[in-house]
Length: 298
Image (cartoon, rainbow, N blue to C red; front, side):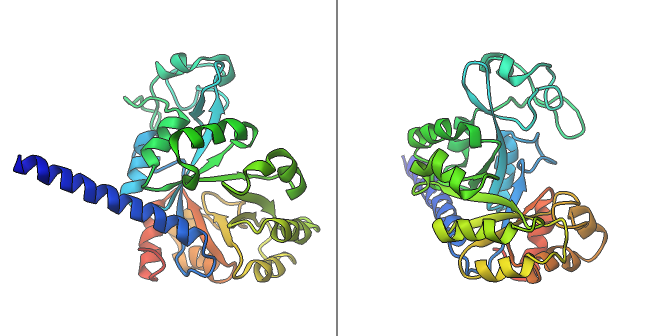
């Protein structure tokens, strides 16, 4: 009996700690004045477990990553699953287009790791990912814009509205028309390039009408004319999300360069000069280590 009571107490404490961390992540996200930089693991910690798998999410949670970016696809029988590509060819031991396969057919496959080795891991449903992440971490859903209604049905079913960051690259007017009924409940993040001449106006339209918690900004030209005006506009209002996975998202800066050179010249530049408050990475471990060295992450 004493052991059982101790176990219940342990589980209760751990659950409370997880919930507190999840709440803290969301509060930090919604506080643009916070100095903490949130780390986003691209497709989970895919060097430890297959990309877009529950194990990759679990690994990110254990590392104290703040957000996991996952990709959403829809099967032939209407099930939302986690997978980046439109086919199962690259990431599983099967072949075929997802839209032509049932969930059970895809579930029978096994995921590959990043080296191409077949593992015991299965393709998860989005519902499973929501439940595995609940209370522990936030999820950013990529490729989910077309499935917004179905995603929100799952958020109702699993009580995970606070967990999700939806995103898309459409102008504000289109998003309002398509999914305005959800914008009071779900965190929605625009994806905008700062290279076009009208980039500032596009950001301003969102800021005026919606004030998003964050913007995913693409910066091909590091010294483009829109960078500083947008940074000033969003200061104290919204977080700036930048990507470090590979060159092209932010000039030629990426995780590989940070590993080869001084990370101050990559991650530091994005934070100090470009105003980043969120960084999406393929190497969450080194990034968290760097941010902790600057007291920018727990």
